[in-house]
Image (cartoon, rainbow, N blue to C red; front, side):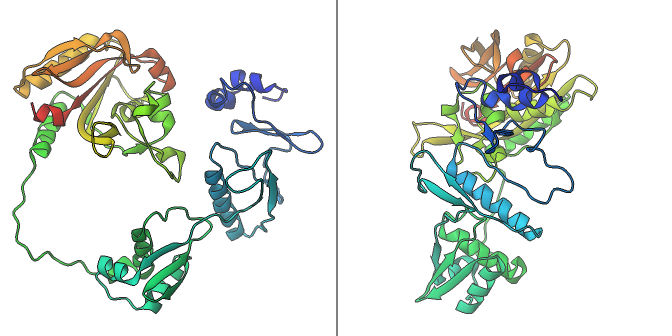
Length: 393
């Protein structure tokens, strides 16, 4: 698009605006960057200007801007990009950023900015964890290979964390870098001396049986990451954020939330499978975790089955039939109860699965808004069953 657009027009008619405009859709004010000649640089993080904000082949001088809600994360990102560009041969020129008010790093910050805290552990912790009595010089040499300057003083290692790292949360993180710096092949595994006999747990046996049953019902098994983005797990699913476990220091927005449900992962697969012949039937047996104030840790991890089916004729009756068949072969009686309010499903077209008076799962027709969020336009049904609750009934 070549014509000039206002910021409001960008988020409503421009392709990039439609993709990222939801970030500012309800904000009273929009972020806007311009130079001293009042020429537009960027409407972050939606789009750069098509003139001086565009990067073209042959450009030798670049102004790199970072925008976001967490200043510490932005400073880390700026340091990482600066290091990458320095490795490519660029000369990095610092920029002084003046904020209207005090921040945790001051009112004026010269970027790139070093904010990392020193890391430390004892030599004994390294020996005990790695099972190898490394000398002081060996420890320092291993960390140096990882880009970490360190000294050993009176049995303790003191390390200066590189500008591009922000993942030193515990002494074991420093031990890990010592190990990687020397190479994993140096540390030979040790066989346990105690004799034990292992077997599958009841949960694992149930999971395997359910996998066989789902394949028999015509479903294809999937495997997904346990971490994802806020957009995938919360925004797209109309899921309450207060129930989700948020990562304190994610290295990427793609891994900032522990998944509270399997359905988002299944819907993501469905969103990129429109070209495949219908019907689509996929499932996963895996773990989810979410906030639970009734536990000592404040969170809980559960084993669950999640499955999804998509086709032009897919509806409540079809997903109910899948559930009925599954429980028949599990030799488990169940009843259905009204699902109540759940933003993932169409009201009145979903149900809770009850076994011995306890809720073990939920199924129904996926809400049209959720499908639209995932850019899917085919009727879709989904189900999620708590296998731990089912096992304990």
